[in-house]
Length: 324
Ligand SMILES: [Zn+2]
Image (cartoon, rainbow, N blue to C red; front, top):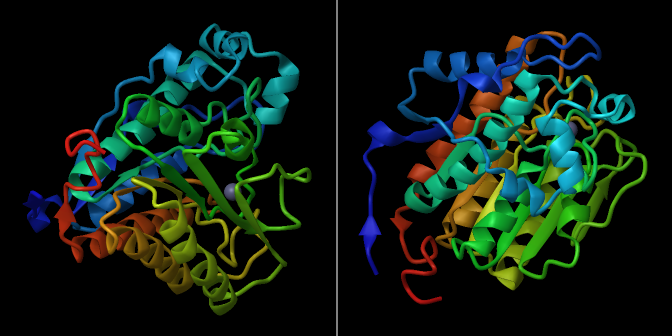
């Protein structure tokens, strides 16, 4: 078994693309500022990091998961107004290019995680996107698209998708239903969006106002058992920061410290078993986008720091190479 250590100069491997930014939409309340501000916060933190630019996601990868006619609507910017209303913003040429890059970004983060133990996509986690439409600020479901492609290519045998965004990962659950090599875990606020929940492999619905201790009690009761039973070769982590007490769309009561404990725990449970883990940004909402961006940046830096505590083995990372 080959064992590789990476120097601290490559602490955080983060995927980012200029197209992650988009001009403010003409309709809707969604703000794209945070994607730039996250990178500003990371760069200003002085932490060692390497930035990686993703290629646009090939159309076929999207069509393997989404209805090809919906993919066509996005690519030609002919998404019906009704679907755009569900998404929350109009699908312009920039958005069409953006979502191809954010989807390619999660796939790239997974590839980088197999090399370095952990890597982050600085956008995406678009867990509400469904088969034939987007929803809830999500256009294409990068988690389902990447998981599907990684398994199809033999880059992973089984993938666990851990979704700790405060909203249920309904799109991911429905797009991966029946895939025995994908396990979806969603821990979410029961009374939050979406009103009609889908069925994940395991859903843990939390009551309003759960605090740091209550949250960690629940997460630590489920996550280690799932990893041991399902034995994933890769974990995709939707690391939304919207369980924070100050989040505009959350209903839980986590502190900054609570989010850090959550993120370190999730990475530790993966890495102590030699499993690579890639994160997607997920939700985070507030009037001051800098505060939200700082929350996301702290989350990624905490995960990179936790990852650095665990030596990276190539064993689980490259199942093909060792004949698994
Ligand atoms: Zn959310």
